Length: 92
Image 1 (cartoon, rainbow, N blue to C red):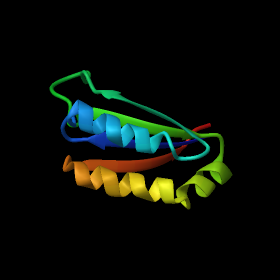
Image 2: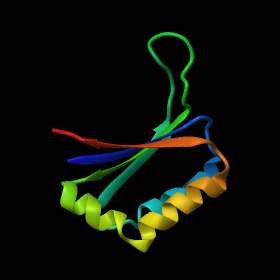
Image 3: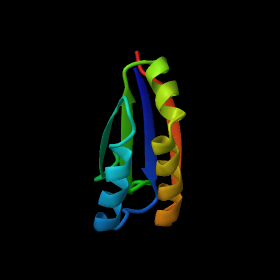
């Protein structure tokens, strides 16, 4: 299984983020989820919002990553104006 996870430094505007989430749900072959980060074991969270896609395998991820829908989500994320990081993980 492949996970793409995104962590945001601040919580995005909920209405604007729902527009972004609608784009993310259009990426073929993946399941999209997102939510507010509510805490960490000690101190304050470094990131305040989280999103992820889950793909069945590397082939599904690679196919999705080549689509215009996937590319549009990256452009839209930047347009939201909230600093973020994207990570890719292979989950066993």
